[in-house]
Length: 181
Image (cartoon, rainbow, N blue to C red; front, top):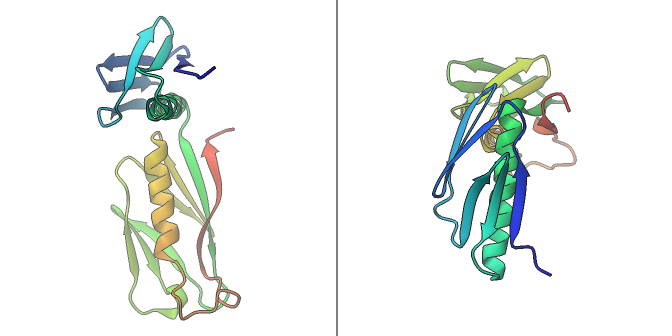
């Protein structure tokens, strides 16, 4: 039998409001909103302390969309309770790389000996900290935290003219998940 509805429990201290395809989740750390209007064939309803995401038909696409929306809602509920964390490590062997946060940008200097610094804009809703050779990205929004971590990793990606066996300088994602788990 195919699964056509998903149930997501709402824990204490978290409130969920659904207006059509717009979902608003509030918790101790803040509020997240998301509009699922571009995802067809799905109905979102709050029943007691449960969010029910139903596929309107048994079509495979609609069932897949319902499962995806349920997963997004679960991540939003987790995020308003405990922030999402990405731990990145600064790695260099040839040129000592310096990373610092200035205003709304992360500045990477001396990347593979380059004279011009690399500037990475900070995604709104995220917090970036540099502690020694570790960079910690936190946010209540999982997508924002992941986007920021990905931008930092891509900014230091090795160009094709370098041999990856020899040059491993860069910033790499080491750990990710909910803070405290």
